[in-house]
Structures are given as structure tokens and as C-alpha cells.
Amino acid sequence: MAMRHVNLLIISLLTLQLSFSQINEIGIFAGGSNFIGDVGATDYISPNQAAFGGIYKWNRSSRHSYRISMIFTELEGVDLDSDDPRRQQRGYSFNNNMFEISAGMEFTFMDFNLHNGKPVATPYLYTGLSLARYNNYFFINNTQTSENSKSWAFGIPMAIGFKMRLIDNFILGIEVGARYTFTDEIDGSVPKADTRQQFRFGNINNNDWYTFSGITLTYTFGENPCYCIN
Image (tube, rainbow, N blue to C red):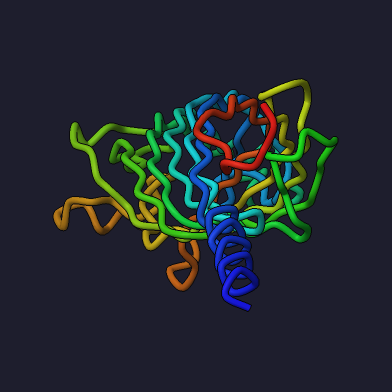
């Protein structure tokens, strides 16, 4: 009886170790970005500028991971690309360099167990909090004009993707993600300086959005549970 209890305890500890095993992923993101705001087209998935960066994940279990990413891009909006005749007639355009840091949690639809050596793939969702740094602009005489300053904007990332083990320790993912920001200044429709508020335009009730579409390639490393065969 005592030996049976010992065996049950060992099995429980092994199961707990599997649940809390620490597997790390580090890699790159490459793809495109597009902007949705008061200038340019309003298509939600229509990348028109390159985006690239790095990503790190800590796979807390086979169903969820903590992750952080840093992405660089140049957001662009061109009124002539819009389907809105009023924007086409106005003819504004802007470019804004952006650096984003995002942190949050990734949830998989199915178990994503990297320990058993078998092919594995799953759709996933990601959300958390983002912080983006961008240049401040305003429009005067239909021309984008710099305010010679930068700002930070918080946002909420919402992404959906699909990932799979590619070969050995490499994981390939395809992801589309939108960012809702708590600012309306990225496209220059709301000047940062109070003295330039007369140049404000657009819908004052909607904040800016931007999206990233692309692929991730990560390398996994870390200790496997003790009963896994390397």
C-alpha cells in the first residue's frame, strides 16, 4: 500500500513538472503593416509598408504562453488609395515611423506540446498591452508638417494566428493582428501642440488603429521534463 502511494506521488510530480516545464522561444517577425484612421484607406488587412522585429515566448503550458515583441515599421496613409470620394478629393498623405513594444498572453486552441517529438500545430489567439512611439505631425496647406517631437501611445493588441513545428526546434507561425490605440494623433489629424488645434480634422470620436500581418520564426530551447527522451 505504501509503495502504491509513493508511485502515485511520483506520477503526480511528473505531471506537475510537465504542466510547469519552462520552454523558451526566441525569433523574428517579418511582414507588413497598414494604418486605419482619418487619412488613407480603411481596409483592415491591406499591408502597404514593411514591418520587422523580434519576439520571445515563455511556454507556461501546452495551452498558453507569455510573450513579448518589439516591431519596427513605417505607417503610411494615402487618401487617393481610399474608397471614400471625400478623402480622394482631399488628397492628404502621411508617413510615420513607429516602434512598438507589446506584451501579453497567447492562447492555443489545441495542446501545443513540444516535448513528445511529434508533429504539432494549432491556431492561437494573442492579446495584452502595447506601447508605441511615433512622431508628431499636423497638416498645413495640405502638407504633412513635423512638430519636432515624439509621443507614446498605449494600445490593445488583438491577433489570431496559426503555428506549427517546422523542423526540430523551429516553430513557424502566420499571424494577423490589429492594434487599437488610445490616441488619435498618429496620422496628424489631431496636433499634439495646443496652439495648433485649429488644424484638427477627421472623426474626433474614433482613435487610430494599425495592423501587422506576417510570419514568425522562433527557435525553442530549455529543459524538457525528466521523463522525456531527447
